[in-house]
Amino acid sequence: MTQMWDHGRAAVFAMMLAGLGTAAQAQGCAPRIADEFLVKPGHLLMATSPTLPPMAYADAQGNLKGLRIELGAEVAKRLCLTPEYISIEYAAMVPGLQGGRWDLIDAGLFVTEERRKILLMIPYENLAISISTRIDDDTVKTADDLAGKAVSTDIGGYAEVKIKQHNADFKARGLAEMTIGLFDNYATVYQALRAGQVDAAVSIDPVAKQYEQRGDFRQALSGMYPTPGSLAMKTPEIAQAVSDALKEMKADGTFDRLMEQYGVTPAPGDLSYLPLKN
Image 1 (cartoon, rainbow, N blue to C red):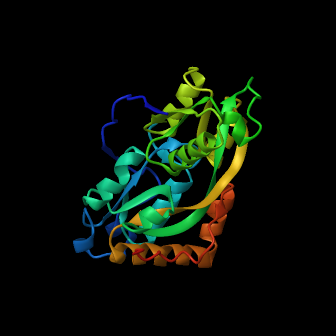
Image 2 (tube, rainbow, N blue to C red; image 1 turned 90 degrees about the horizontal axis):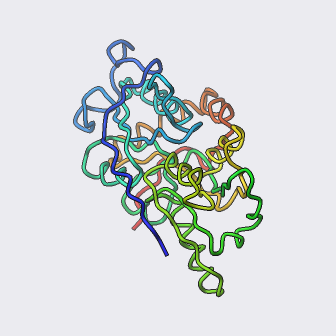
Image 3 (cartoon, rainbow, N blue to C red; image 1 turned 90 degrees about the vertical axis):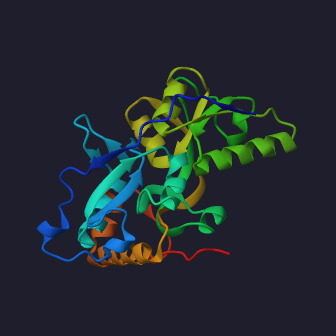
């Protein structure tokens, strides 16, 4: 059974990256992507969800921080473009890219067969799924311990797909199914756990680990379904330019230093974009 909690769609708003990127004109170099391929000439518009510390989040002053923010800013810098972020829930990211509202999705989208049919994806980070519980709850030691429990996860994400597959497996084996609450982002996913609306939260490993390190929740399970996360684009002109920038970062050590700083394992591969899958 899947249950939806509607907290209202967050308004879409542009967030200029503070302190990490400068305009192409100030860099003294020519943009490496022609204006005709960009939503906003001279800018690289990136959709993100700043609700996943340490991957992407806003500090108390509203400045964007995190691995994905720094990665996107560095790519834009090397392309001689001004980085600009659009904060949006995951479910709206792919439709927005297809509708020409932004140039790139910088949110670690998991690489799936379905997405590869419509998106040009560059795998760069290797992520897995975690199960979080309240600090005083040690009842979840295996995935089967989720049977009959209420769980929360983000709508439209890889975690939703996998937890629903778990439910199908529970049903096939005669176990009690979970009640799955779907939320717009991980902040509200964990708010539901804190409020006692659910028994467990389903997220990605770095998010669950940070919540545990802060003493908020217990990372009961981790390392489930390791899958590459990606940057995603619509046009090959943008995808190739972004891939070239990432390969330059890899060659001079910037890429590996950034991944190590945040404790994230690079995805397998050479940072080339994956062609559309028929």
